[in-house]
Figure 1 (spheres, rainbow, N blue to C red):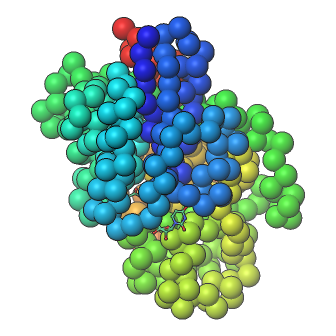
Figure 2: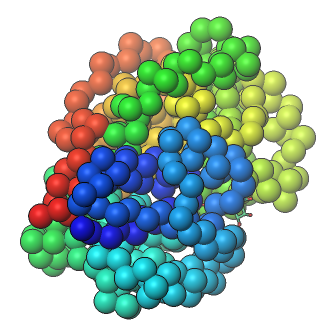
Amino acid sequence: MLKIINVVGARPNFMKVAPIVEAMKRREREFTPLLVHTGQHYDADMSDAFFRDLDLPAPDIHLGVGSAPREQQLAAIAERFEPVIAREKPDWVIVVGDVNSTLACARAANKLGVRVAHVEAGLRSYDSSMPEEANRVETDRIADLLFTPSAGAGENLLAEGIASERIRLVGNIMIDSLKKHLERAQQSQIKGNLGLSNKDYAVLTLHRPANVDEPKAFQQILDALEEISRRLPIVFPLHPRTRKNISRFDLSERVKSLSGLRMIEPLGYLDFLSLYSEARLVLTDSGGIQEETTVLGIPCLTLRENTERPITVTLGTNKIVGTDTATIVSEAFAALDSVPKPPVPIPLWDGHTAERIVDILAL
Ligand code: UD1
């Protein structure tokens, strides 16, 4: 019997951990899964909504950490997680993705001599200004077992001198959740509630510090949105960081003046899936959405200078467009004027990644 602590902390963790916990619960003779929530994200619409939508059991342990500058948050999570590890004595701690909770919990487990598995290992943007890149590199260095989503991720790890015995190509865990919930998401009322009757709309997400903590980049993006929203409505669920910066930079009047830009509260997993899966175009600075749009064949423009997920560009529907106003507008219009390509299946992004992970852990 293996006792496993699965860690969640921030919004993009929930849809990655849910299928793993579910796969372990299906094999209850082999696994005792525990769920630890660090509390990095705590608003109901950034956390609770996802437990409901994804059928994720309530956390067994909540560390209640909350927001703080990066180094303080890393230290606070590790400090509160260490006694949990000491008490529960798990065989493995599983961390997913690249948020601060991922690295902090990997550090704590490593310090106490408990094996760490990292799901979504090996992604690299090679952009050291991103906290996520620092989180990925250090988590991969610490982890005993590295579950990668693509062959390219494994190559990145080998290039850093990580032994091949630690690397296992298992596919993309997020796509397990997407495939499981796509049909259910179609019952969401979100489009009707927003008064959208056809597919003629775009969806926007924006929350990276490089875009929303920097007034210049934020302005450039808004200038582009002004143009694009004259052609079709843009639905914009607002991340709390972005909402705060709109008022901090005195941009409230500006965004309200863009009548085609529909700002709404953050959405739960099913409503958001329903919304983007039917959109004509997605504009985003998120990592995961680049992958989800690729699987569904929805054109995606990434408002960043780089991506840690290049397979979404080479095989998928993603285009890296940066934050220059004219480039965003011309790429958006080009995407709207062309017939979308049918989605290309990506090896092992098949909805069965969690099973492969638990098979390997059970060995
Ligand atoms: C974090 C992750 C990022 C991920 C994103 C998804 C890190 C370094 N960043 O960024 O990789 O893409 O989550 O959402 O881990 N806040 C609230 N309510 C909440 C959570 C946050 O109001 O429930 C506000 C706080 O003011 C906080 C700010 O949002 O300071 C930023 O939160 P934080 O978790 O630090 O970073 P994110 O921008 O959410």
